[in-house]
Length: 178
Picture 1 (cartoon, rainbow, N blue to C red):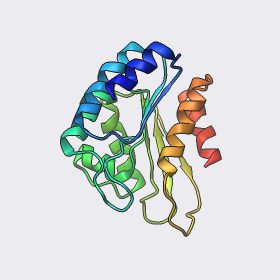
Picture 2: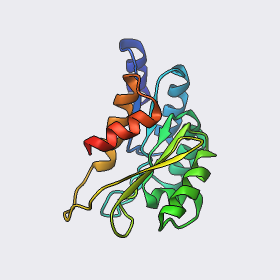
Picture 3: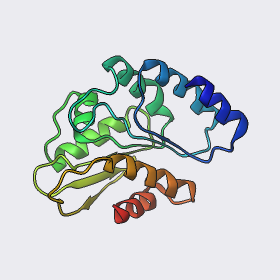
């Protein structure tokens, strides 16, 4: 992984970074060392801890390292409710819980937090906390199993940020395409 990051650094112009599944704490350390070289670009971190079927993808140690060393370098983090609950130690079951949790997650260092509410009972609600205000985006639940929506969403976010959208504009534009 470090070799790949070195190759990227030497051979490419980096305009934005989207972080998804990370294998272990060694990858987290390499990523944490890489990001400060690009302080002016947007970084969106989708802190994937487990797959939809429950398979753990990143160890607890690696996940805690991600929170400690990568979140402070992020423009936006995009945890789902389970990931947010694991980080804060608080169950997130309602929109009010999401608001409080987003504020707590902001204290870990990112500029903004998007709480993905697909696991809420009823209609899904996503919430953006931009450091000052919370805004929400509601949609109808689709009655089927869909994989990868968090990955797509965070990729859209970084794409809009790279093109000069504000955090709020990128959130709205990304949500409108989901």
